[in-house]
Image (tube, rainbow, N blue to C red; front, top):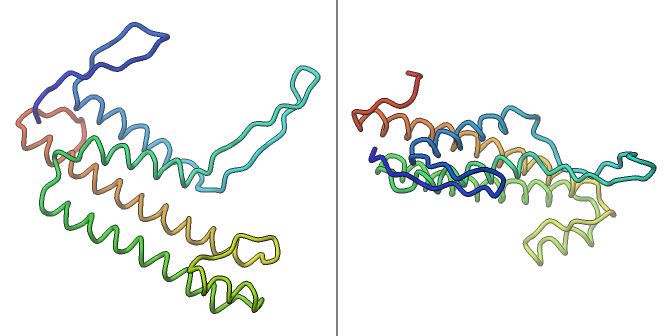
Length: 175
């Protein structure tokens, strides 16, 4: 792996230069920490602070890990080999297939005829308070997608490890 220095900007600190490998390792570490958290839906929480209520928005952890993994993907894109490119094609096919599976599951389980016909017409599960099923199916779908991203993260780490070892410069402390 060729050592290139990348400038990381932070207006609170002096600029420090990191190699691409260091940036990738930092992103892997960030993803690892995000994947270690409970995969749950986001929510807003009110907190009483200094005589007033403050609303704190907690993001959907499944979306956080997707974003984190996409950034790692972007950083490693120049190192993709044929094996990884084939895996990524399958990843996208499987992700699309998951969407179809949960859509079909919704259509088979929805009892409200109007919502079901609307879903068939638009090709999307309606997000409405009239049906708890749509939210249940949506949550299952998001959980499935998050698991797909966990597998993609593992593949990206293995790709980095493989490329790192081929470079002749060992930078990671694991086997």
